Length: 311
Image 1 (cartoon, rainbow, N blue to C red):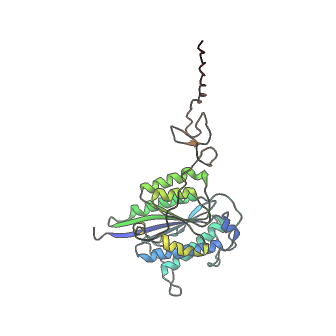
Image 2 (image 1 turned 135 degrees about the vertical axis):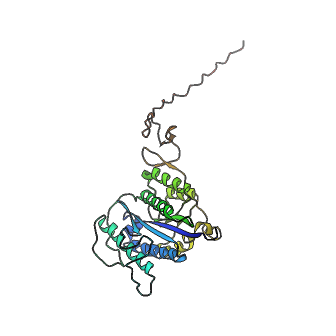
Image 3 (image 1 turned 90 degrees about the vertical axis):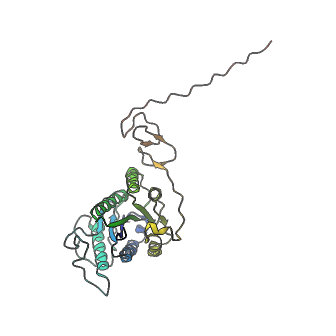
């Protein structure tokens, strides 16, 4: 066991949905966040030569891998960079990560599935459009779990991988994805995969539940300008090392569930005894498993006893 190689696999899920408030108010916000995420990803690779990295962009119409690239001619099966060139003394892997992430995120935001011509790599301004819709965070987390499972399946027996997921988002709760979130959270808990969340704007209660279920950290940063500092301070270390560090205290988690009828978070509701679906109002038929329930009978009225007068 002394010859066992230990590595860390980090999958970063970055929310690029243009309907986020901070993205709508500032055209440069997405560029600043991406710069911080790339610097944080390179710091993770710099911690140990055996560390592995993956970055997924979550949009309102798709979720796609930004890194590693899907083309076999850009990166080999063993993870070595083939076509990366050193620039200004920068490590070749760092250059490859930065170029690949910027190119793929430009394609995703600006043209979706279409190919994007060569443009300047240092700016993403102009790519943010006015599209709406919820961020597909649950699907991106499911993609991250599948990627981790594939990597852990192919590693040699002498290697131990500590896998974790980091979500960087400014979106709020999406009750319509409640079941997808719960499936992802409990799957990650079963696989001992930690989910961390770095919130840039709102307080997503469902993601807070995921952090609490999987043993991860949740942090809402007060200023976007300090994103890189918070990422390096809180999320750079692996979960086994965090017990020895002074980190922000855990937040109070809102464990409200979303009803299956209106997709809204509720405090009190009705639960199907067969499939455990949650409804805000009583329904004689479960819309999920089509189980028929008996209509609750009205409560019996108490008959007042007549007082007998003694003569």
